[in-house]
Length: 305
Image (cartoon, rainbow, N blue to C red; front, side, top):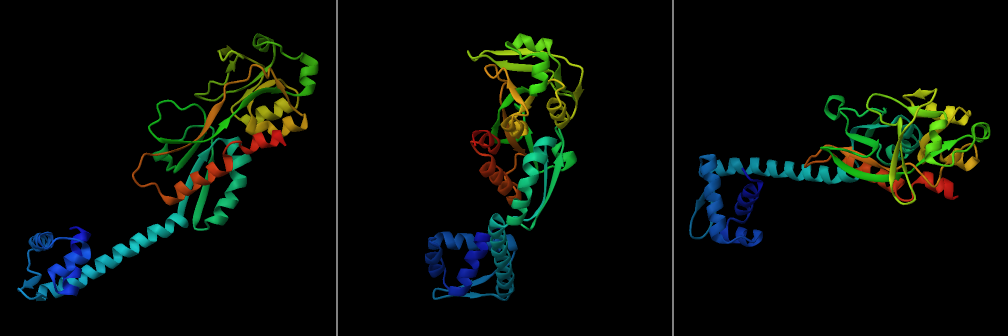
């Protein structure tokens, strides 16, 4: 049963005229009459007594009028609640992001978001693995990677520029690579976990050509922050996202290696399931991230300062 038909019936009952109700709703008398007949057939009862001068409600019509008013009021309240929720989202919001990115960037921003939207209960899941949306009941995934065959909606938040870097002590001791091939002779600190390909480093030549090198070293970890600490302590060369090491580069504790052959950059993306209805809390959080991480992202602004 269409709410438009209920609204039409209510207006006819209030105005006691098919013509007046049609004029009010911008419908022809013929359309008004046919829709009321259709409504009566669906209900299996007569709602109106029609005469040439006016329309009167039957006893069933009087009874149905009150229910129609209740339904229309409930619909109006629901629409109002949705409109309010767009500005004041509420409910649980479960977000998954890589460990380092979650700690360094999302965690500091979370307080501002929840202060703006106190009815949202934000749960931040720090994980370097690609969580299962439905099994883990994740609302939003943040990933720093080139996406392949994703069946989810992807919204780009920022670009993650990567660098090869090492401490001044390590470079003084082991020498500074001059060409990509020189990396083979160095202790490369590698990120390894199931599905990771970061033991293979892809460089971009000044001509735009990509070159991929298979590298090795004496130390690897499944935790990016451990690699950063090893790099700072002079253990080797690491490939790092600028969002993770910008302050150390700014302070001179890490130096960029082979800046003319940088690693390939990757998008930072927000992923969520295809749905006709995206909860306002998810949409608001994605918009919030776009505003805070937009070009130039905050870590690049650290280096420019």
